[in-house]
Image (cartoon, rainbow, N blue to C red; front, side, top):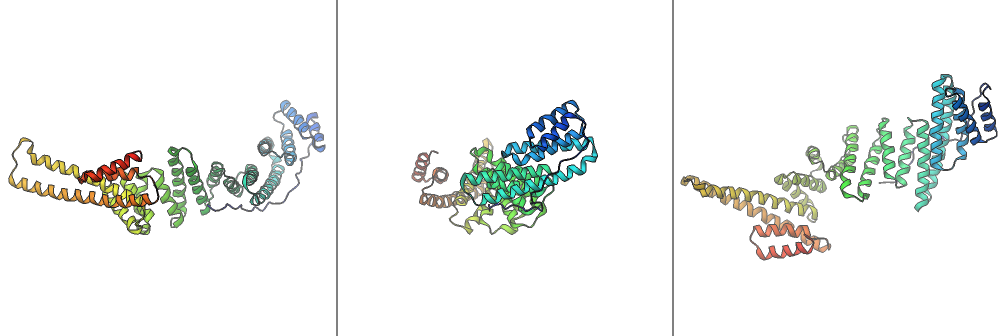
Amino acid sequence: MKHALPIMSGLLVILILVAASGCRSNPNIEGARLDLRNKNYQRALTNINRALENDPNNSEAFLLKGDILSEMLPEVSDGAERTGYVGELIGAYAQAVTLDPENNAHVTRQRFILYGNEFALAMEAYRDADQLGGHERANQFTAAARHFRNASMIIPDSVSALINEAHAYYNAGQAQEAADAYESAIALGHTDRDLFIYLARTYELMAVELVDPDAQPGYYRQMVRTLQTARQHYPGDGEIRKLLLNAYAMSEVTAEALPFFEEIFPVEQDNHIYLYNYGTLLLHQEDYEGAIRMLSGAVALDSSYVNALFNLGAAHVNLGVQVDKSFQAVEDSLQGNGRRIAPSEIERLEARKEAIERSKSEHFGQAITHLESARRLLENDLSDLGSVCHALYLAYAQTNQRSRAEEASICARQSGR
């Protein structure tokens, strides 16, 4: 995924906060005002909190508390602490407006000023992070993300702050935080194409880097959900389509994936990876004939595609076993189970048995051809041979190639199968 770039906002200048004026009556409020003028913020907060304890419905006190927290914010360097104060001042301002709607104009002005300040600090941190490396780079991107988070808390419908927060967290290597921010932006109605792609690739990154492989399909299912939504907005987008193909292939939602693979066959039929994934899904659904068609197409386009060769061989083995069961059923019918069989029926069953035997031999022969090709390629790469040797053992055994079956069995055991 390419480096995520920030979105510019119109409010990038540091603005001066303006404290509200009001009548002077409550001694704690008056003390808080004096402390604020003297920049003794902690004492100002103590006074204003005492005023609110005595009068919890005092709109003037809530308004002043918001102003105190706003003015002290530039003095707070710790990111988590700063975000905590932002949440507290937003709550104070909201209560001030609830108790007295006339406070709305002052609060709105203060919120825009605070938003501009936080966004400007975020952009500065983002630009600085681009010049750094290692842990310093990650830490600076995290600092930028926190400032963007503060901005989006101050003005919750600010999509640009949310998207930039997500980009910053992604660049800091914090994929879950990035995904949460991207999701929030989409929830606000943002439908930019790149936003969906960033979110999908973030889930893909989380799946790839996950220590527990059993949890991987869950992230790929999140990726599928994201790309399904993206496709509703951009139905003809090739990149979204290919990402969705890969996500479906890894998400273990075969029944849901197959209609999509079938739908896009006309535009992807020359894509060997698509044919491999489609064939593999059909193989899991035990549609061996369909799997063979798709996997044969993948191998025709890329004869060194080891995974496609192996799965094609496996599909032929499974279909051969299936055909063998039909052979046994015909054989049982010929035995008659104690009843007499008419000569014409015997002739028909014998012909059927011969046809099944030819089909069985053909499938196991095809399986051996493709599996041997896969084995040679794996041997050249010094890769694990356990699975392919086990499949070859089954195919050799079914075609009465005892020495080859024994060699394949030894190979499989040596590889842990």
